[in-house]
Length: 304
Image (tube, rainbow, N blue to C red):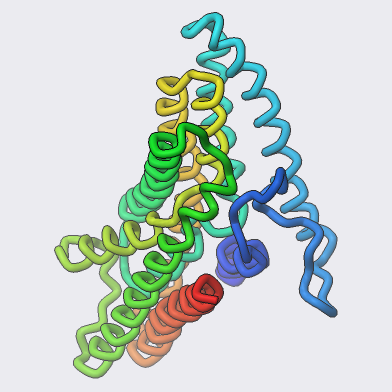
């Protein structure tokens, strides 16, 4: 059972959806979840190929429905279309966050390394979601105020510097977690505590969420741009809250599964100190090294 849980964590958090995400922004109508590209000489199993296809199809369906409801809101600002638009914004956030990026790997890596409660995991997930949506809103509004128009091409041009900052910070967080793990093991201060009363742990989680959240969410940018274009800015701002709520729900799954899995493994091994140290080392180093490697690769990509 425990092996099954760990396999689910790996598939959900570290699967091909994150690694395959080279440019998460849309380009001339393409969805940010690529379904046709694959590594040379490698073809994922058919059931894994269907997942990104499902995401792309349903995002397009949801955007089509939201387009209809958005135009109805122009005539009846607070009619049924208004509430349906917000509901679909939430659903869109849930589905969109299952695609590449969006902090799933970050929260999983962090909680593989650090102890935390389920509440800590959910809080961090929603912080990342709201930061990502807020970042997209700020960029779109800035572009609109300067150019009096918005487009995804302008959004792409304004975002790379934020990617570089975000992945640089995440790499530093990963290095901090790595050396902190070394210190804890050498000094014998490693622990299986599941709480977060240590202010350093709370601060570390917030900084990590902020670093990941700097990356603007392209899905939120698409919806918000549409609301500006058709003149329902107020509805657009409110819909961003619902998109973030939906995204946070999906990201929470990654953090909670990781926290529960880590806690279960430590609970099984805590009666044997030697095995516990081995398990602790594997989880802690794996989390920090995963965060370092992923952030470094993405940083190099965006520095090219």
